[in-house]
Structures are given as structure tokens and as C-alpha cells.
Amino acid sequence: MYSVDLNCDMGESFGAYKIGRDEEILKYVTSVNIACGFHAGDPSIMKKTVRMAIEHKVGIGAHPGLPDLAGFGRRPMDITPEEAYDMVVYQIGALKGFVDAEGGQLQHVKPHGALYNMAANKPSLADAIARAVYDVDRNLVLFGLSGSELVRAGQKHGLRTANEVFSDRTYQQDGTLTSRRKPDALITDHEQAVNQVIRMIKENKVHSLQKVDVDIDVQTICIHGDGSRAVEFADYISQTLRGANIQLQPIGEFSTR
Image 1 (cartoon, one colour):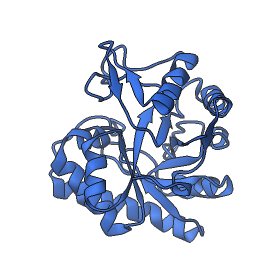
Image 2: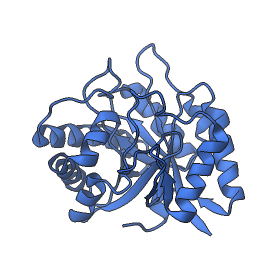
Image 3: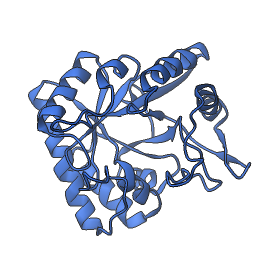
């Protein structure tokens, strides 16, 4: 029996703007990454999302991003490691306040968007983020792109880490995700996406766009909740993985390094 976490980014609405179908997707995932107000989200949405996550008994994670609401945190910014440290501490603290107030427990931290991708291949930035997580709560699990500098930095600082893979994204031969600016970055066919995930779990391989197999480690799988068929896909992937003898459970319920 294989065990894996299924996570989804949530709490990305703010003010009068609604993004994603959080309430419907929550019943299919085992962990959620909640926006902390920089790239998306606001205090009221954070509280609401935390409450829903506790009600559905899923693992709760902070999803800190760059301070770029207009760009949804997906545009790289020239920040120093110390600025990254401060941003991450600030945002984890904000979400942790709501989690504590609601009687829950924060499980993990997963950087968002450009911050996540920048930390995947910049050791100094990865180190600052891992240090921030450790300094806030050394028991938190740090999510990072599988095999990335962020995962290595988390391990160096003594954190539990989770190698993350993406169900709906294509990969390059160096193990990185294809840029969203490229037309072939996303996988829109549900069966193709899930077959890629099953192979990553059972064979620790992913087929890159350069038609080369890449070694990959998997503890958690990301799905996205803001697409037009997001709920349909969440249902499909959770059922198909279980049917393939793959157990879904929050990352906090199994040990990973």
C-alpha cells in the first residue's frame, strides 16, 4: 500500500472577489494550503477557510507568497534572503493566529507561486525560508518542489520535509516545472494527469517534455482549485488513486524526511 498526501491551495478569495471552489473541493483532499494575505486572501477569508479545514479534518498549511496581489504572486521579485525570511515569518504568524483561535493545529508551510519557484533553485532564498519556518515552529512540515533546494534546505535545518509533485503540470528534464508562460505548461486531460501521478508514486519517474524520464520522489501531490473543472478533477483523482491501491492521508499522519 502506497501512502500520499493530496493538497490544494485555498483561501484565495479576498474582499468582493471569489476565487476557487474551496467548500466543494475540501471533501476530496487531505491537506490545504491557505493564502496568508500577500498574494491572495484576507483576514476574514483566512478565518473562514481555517474553520472549514478543521470541520473537514484536513491538514492545515500556511501558503506564504510575494506581496503582489495584482500578479497573484506569480511574478518573480528581486528580494533578499532576509526579506524572504521576514515575509514568511509574518505570514505564518498571521495564519497560525487564526488556527490557534479556532482550536486547530498548523501542520505545514508551502510557499506560493514565484516564491516557491525561486526557492526551488536559489539556495540562499531556500535557506531563508527554511530558517523562517524552523524559527516559528520546528515541528512544521516544509513542502517544496520534489528534489529542490527548498527541500534540501529544510532537511539541513532539521525540519520534516515533503517532496511535492504537481498533477496538472508538465516537467522539464532537470526536474523543474514548465513555466506557465509556455503553452504546454498545463495538463488539461484528467486521465493523463492522474496517470502521470500514479507513475510518479509507484515508479518514482516522470516523463519530461524533452521525452526523458526523470527520477522523482513523492510525498504530497498538488491539485488546483480554481479551474473550471477543478471539483470534477478533485473527485476523479481521489477516487482513481484509491482505486490504484494508494492511500490518501494528511502529511502529518506519516513520517517523511
